[in-house]
Image 1 (cartoon, helix red, strand yellow):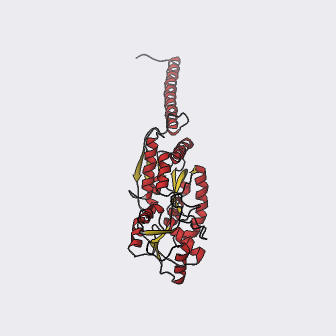
Image 2 (tube, helix red, strand yellow):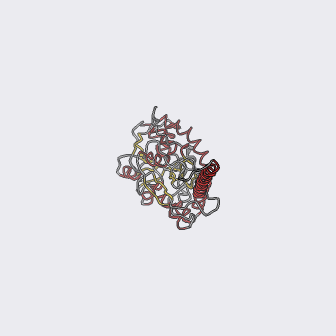
Image 3 (cartoon, one colour):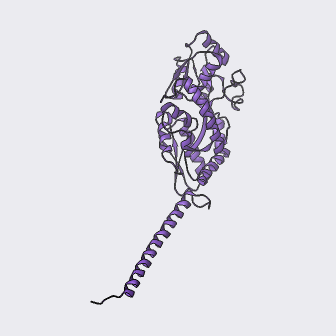
Length: 346
């Protein structure tokens, strides 16, 4: 057996170190390459990367609801106008008044391949449920319109103004029933504000959908509804319902003869802001890409037509505008939901 002197052993040790170094270096290069590839996937700086696969847009309501229709319209416009190199697909994650959808998206922290159609729910859901799915768990992307509420009565009702309705509620407290949908939603909040401002006491009834609320008015089961314009317009156009007022900043272009609540002495604005948010901590470049896409959707002819047909108030917010709006809503809605007894006590 051949022997090895110290010099031979020294050389062998050096070879071992060299091979180990090469292995570590190769591993290091592989790690850097993988990190660079991940960064490119998340980044839009080159204009070639994000998005590299389809993006999920969550509707926190069931199919056919207002949120669902808006989400699908946005996805359709984005595809038609080629606003992104990848498709947006809509996924319904309904339940808990928005809680299911928000919980899902909030749990995708850092993932730019999912966002949700939501606005005030980012404030009201955690207040109502105690779930940790508030605005701080999201990246606001912007808003592209407001689905206005309304106050409507049966066409054969004796009331022709909001004041007529309020006077009746003052004369007979808790006997005039007004339909709304989700507790703490825009219609419910509208009626709470109106009662607080005037001292009138209505019997506010919650239904599962705006359609049920409208049907209840026509059937004589309740006397009025505070649902979105889009829910009542079909019956208004067929002369089955009468609009008393709209809680908008100015008269709706398609309804020049219907006064705002403010014109009638009640300075209240109410409606469902059609906003969008991604999970917290997504790459800034990805957030900017989605924000820019929504801005282009808002300017598109198809969305402008959608707003006119559905009597939307033309409102646009970028991501920063929406962040500030949510901060203001946090204070206001916490107060109103607390007064309505809808804040879950911890």
